[in-house]
Length: 126
Image 1 (cartoon, one colour):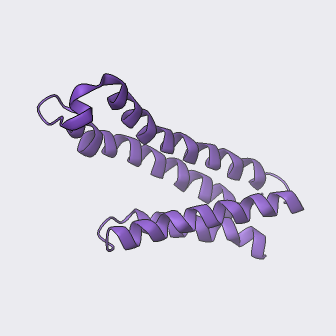
Image 2 (cartoon, rainbow, N blue to C red):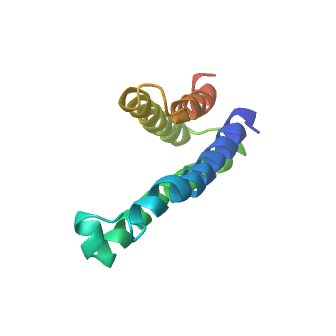
């Protein structure tokens, strides 16, 4: 049992919840409120739905990664599992790096993504 991968799974689930809940309250909800809609968001319910689905779809994808981490934590990691973890680590690292650079460190999510990266790479490098 890999504690590192289970920790990565738990943290990834938490990041997804925070992303969906706080994002809906502080960004998506206010952006889509009738009083603040502009441009295509004011004209199209379809585009508003696409924006909301895209936002929450990211959380769903992270929860999928968390499931993969949990499954891989349960048994010795195969060669294919190592590749999956390296790809996952690269994705979480790039996500963290983009957030860090784009937000100049103000948005602290990069910390969680770098921790997930390290926890995911741990079993690969061991």
